[in-house]
Image (cartoon, rainbow, N blue to C red; front, side, top):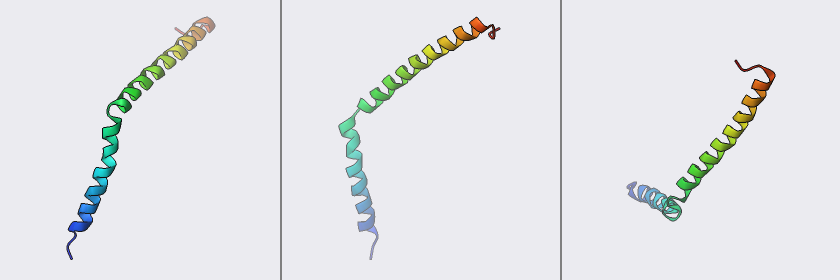
Length: 61
């Protein structure tokens, strides 16, 4: 008995699962870029507030 049907079965399954990426395309990449920029601007806003608080309390040299 050869192992070819087993490996062909795995290959067919992987090809079937990777068709998901054709349907998604670059939408996932674009959403990660947008999420990264939103997170960046959120953190910059928090950092601005923390810096202003530190300057007010005299903890910033």
